Image (cartoon, rainbow, N blue to C red; front, side, top):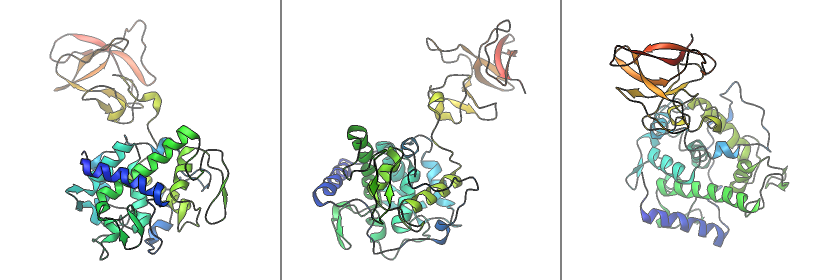
Length: 343
């Protein structure tokens, strides 16, 4: 959902505010939103905490893995055992889930990072009801606020605050890409001291951007350590294992995939029940064709047709786990050779 021009101007104003007043979109320190479940480790496979490696730039920039339905379901079934009030909350006519995904896509920021900071800043994901102090929602990321209680009304609204936060993260990543470091001096391979007196050398841009926003390591109750733990917990709850492999982005019919979005054509479907996934799509006759791509045909699977890769049984070129076999053509009595699961 596109934001209005007014909200876009507000986003730009947020960055100007950051520069002019040396204020970040970071939370004010007068409120502690820590939930007891934020301090535990949900994932049994989580690696040990490393202050130099909080999140990769690829993971922080992953805006393609999730859609608004994923975020809505996450908020309805939060890791805290109850629905977050954000699951039904809207601001300026925009639902919280839509605001998160809109900002995620506009600025190419992982929506998990937005959810994590909403929880760290104001405990909004674990809240089952709208807080009695509405500023926790309407100024969730402190954008437009010079001090607690001193906030510009133009920045009011969860949707505007989310936009501002995602904009700030993307601005840091852009600065690193252009100059090797953020305005605060955080960059890959650059040793810097945090507010809690610890020397950190970010392994790469994602971690540097996190420290630019909140330059504190913390002790798992604040700072980068808490961000890392909650990010791990939310990723585990969402079944997120990292950004898509670039090698399978834009995959063609018959190629490996992990989700529909990996397949680079209209109406694509990733058949996840096939070995390492298989890009396909429903068909009733012809299948997509593109120069330089493997040919495909519409194969019959009972009462439905799906496109599969054509092959030559005398010189098969099917992936591991697949065999070149005769398959009936959908809607016809003839058969063609296609790469089909060998299991």
